[in-house]
Image 1 (cartoon, rainbow, N blue to C red):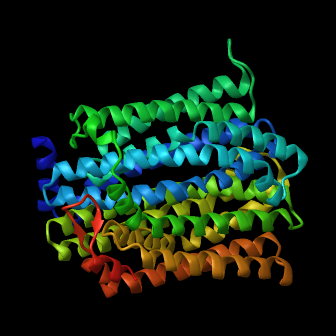
Image 2: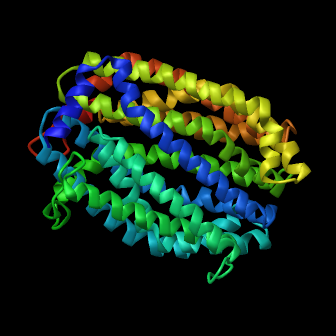
Image 3: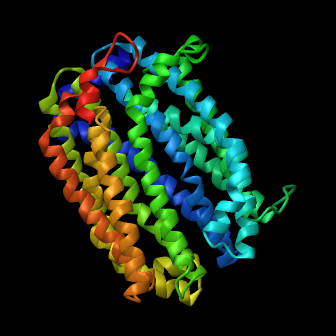
Length: 473
């Protein structure tokens, strides 16, 4: 525990940019490693053909719906853990972690049967061809059976990050992703004694890796050797009030995630109906993987900003909390801009790495290059929104996302694709325009400073005071 207190003290006493980099760099490395593993997985699947890539792409879009649930818990848990850690209340932080774990169990019990029942219909709505449908169902069914490992692994990472420890999740993630690559290789291609499962093998490999990550993450938290000490008693029993309080902060963030997911699903459905059809969806899937090399560092810096915001507000230092957000935003914009520039230059070769499908490459090059131009604005939107969420101020980031991703992006994509007859290129332009809007709006909202006035009561873990509810509105 002394080690943990000294870690928080170092974050509080370091320069603002140094604190941002201390927390952000392990998450950046972790995120890039995750994207690299995703690239390797997609390359393996790509050997099976463009239908397999499209199936994984559709499956991943549907699976991202699950992030709605995890964001509802992780955003609230991160804010509460960080605020209590900043004020020196380790016991309340550990109780918040326990409440988050119980919510993971509850949501997993709901999502597994619901996901299994709805998967075929959702793929039909997305316009999956019969070949893609078969691959996609295999992928999604395995995921839904293992959804508890997906949620619990993500939650353990969020608790560590809220407590200001980003190095331990990095080590766990490296181990987990090495397991992922190895299991995928064995199960996709049927190496040695293992069955040849194709696309389903990719899902099974991920499930095994997430199980390993969950065991290591919660085992580390229970051991107390890596900062926050979570006890078995914190994970057991029923604390309805504590869980409700986590959700009261996190639900707007969950709806924000829902808006993003609905937007992406709508875009996939739109692309399926363009002239390029499945080639456009394959381009979108591969292009999203490539652009994640820019996106994931931005998300990592945003996570660091959220943790620092909560810790500094818990220590009654709103000025440093604000400075942390601005420093993180400009740093993230520079990082994402750099990766965007690289992908802009090498777009054709990056796409060709995954597939030699000429139509997919033709459609995908404009996607990567158009999105690359908007990456700095995307970074600012992500990081300033995460900073506000770290304070427990989640309503306005939700509104920004709903308007820019749903009310602007989707209608604009449909209009440009079909009414302006720009086809897939119109969809790419709509995405970039919505990123520009969300970035500028996030700057405006952050400068207003209302997020600094959100208060979280310590008497009951994660209780959001009436003042906080008023400010969120």
